[in-house]
Length: 122
Image (spheres, rainbow, N blue to C red):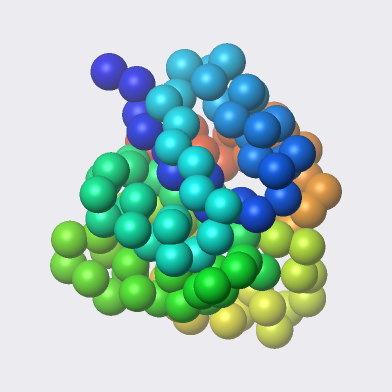
């Protein structure tokens, strides 16, 4: 059975690119274009892993990550932050919210696929 990945990303080009690449690697993909939709889909779809942007409409990625990681039903879901925000302070904030990994855009797709595979093996 294919692992289900939720992508929460408001840049449509990147969302489409990630969806195509993940589906080509036999992942089932669910997409959300803002933080509120992402949070709702995380509850309803029960993904195996979440790719989460930080700068999102409605609810930012920090809040989404924090809300999911402090909920017993979802705390086990690995979250990879994918963002344009670099710098140690941003990484620390994301990790404090419960993120499992942090990748700065633009990133290498092979690096992302390797990180996904490693987090899903846990």
